[in-house]
Image 1 (tube, rainbow, N blue to C red):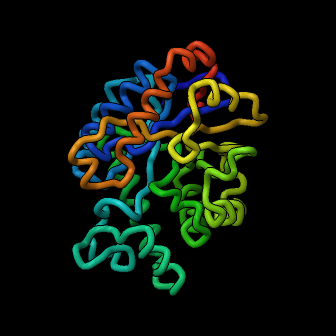
Image 2 (image 1 turned 90 degrees about the vertical axis):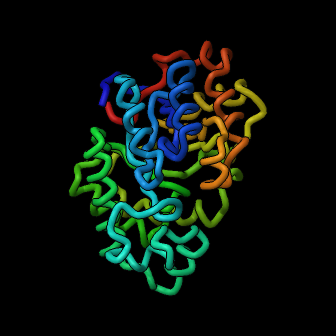
Length: 269
């Protein structure tokens, strides 16, 4: 990971490796915009190529985007039966939540799958010291307990807290806010952000609104989902055209001029 002086805000582009178009959009947000960090999915067909592309950018910090609800497990599906469907792929978020509610999720399998995803990232030349997750599943208390334990074993140096600062709290569902607040007890002692705003959910009116975020106290993280929608993305994920909007925001000249590269930090320094 690159090193740099602490700053008030981190800008992270999520979903590296979800599709070729998403990876290309993230690299554009880094090269021409204010993104300095990204989070790698290791569970999709384009993930390995995404990791290789990110490695060609030595100033781009790459963390892990832990997945239990999108792609295919890094583990043998037979070893994570509580997490997958009949096709061997992860079940959708709604089904995962139902299984959690019925106490049908194995903590041992979650831990094993998390370790398998970390191992895969390392095999591709990525040392993921900053973690977050697809659909914020690491904010669910039943998952958070496992993620926190494995993170301590792996000496992780940053875990995202998806707790929005006022007045952006309305951009996240109340259930997620409550879950994230409850899960914080598991992550206590592991560094992370003190506030978080997801551009894709917030849908700001323009770059000027994003600049105002820097007035928040503490260390914040701005999450975004830049990308170029392609057939692979449309097949795999429901967030498509919005990614071009996020990319335009992250590369907006006003935002670049107001913040500059020096005002944005890496998650791990």
